[in-house]
Image (tube, rainbow, N blue to C red):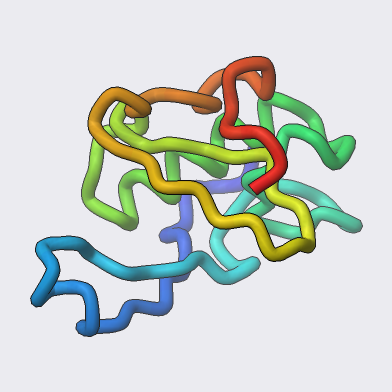
Length: 103
């Protein structure tokens, strides 16, 4: 595995008035080889699960949160949005089986 690199984030301040942090990852700062290079967070695209786990850990560190408090979805290109809350913490972290479906 390559040396640890910081996952690259883009942040917005808009959410702070609602008590949330708003950020998205870029493709930079991960361990996945092409065609997933490099910060692939999806378990459903064919990347090695160990690479995705390492990338998710890097993303959690960049966000400043515990990986177990994050929520992952099986992201699709569509118009469906899903509201998640504290009860959803940890969903989809280790397996796609309990991820938020088709969001």
